[in-house]
Amino acid sequence: MRVLPSGSTAMLVELADLDEVLALYAALEEDRPAGVVDLVPAARTVLVVTDPAVTTLDAVEAAVRRTTPRPGRRDTAEQVEVPVVYDGEDLDDVAAHLGVDPGEVVRRHTGAEWTVAFSGFAPGFGYLTPADGAWDLPRRPSPRTRVPAGSVALAGGFTGVYPRESPGGWQLVGRTDVAVFDLSRDPAALLRPGVRVRFVAVS
Image (cartoon, rainbow, N blue to C red):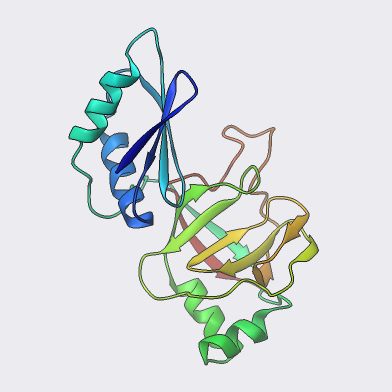
């Protein structure tokens, strides 16, 4: 663990890998140190934001270092279903990479329970990891300049849903009409850290 300052009211906790991030994030969310107002997990870091009127960075760093990481991930009670039409441009390539047919890719993707590990890239873009099973897929060798909003994609060990049209290099396996980011909704992001997700195949 390495702790770095991030401005005057936050610190960035660097960890070895995503498993360590999820374990520390789960423990800190379960028992937040006094004065911590926000926790933001990422692939190898946890940003800890504090209220300087309540605590000091030194006190929070000491509390973080005393925290015993909780094995596993922080799962909220919330679970959402995302209907997907599995007709993505890269579905056949994903199947070939995994050594299965496209129907088996769909079966595996819908059969897994996914959890949002962290958010990033764009507002509302959640990086989802499976409870079990391997999804070690490369990014496309050449990213697309335009990926449609609602595209369901895979890369590395993650799946995600593009919240808006944007460039992207993930493998596209399908599409959904679900708005994963909507400023008129509270909270605006549907796929927040800890939320469990089931993908459901639809015609």
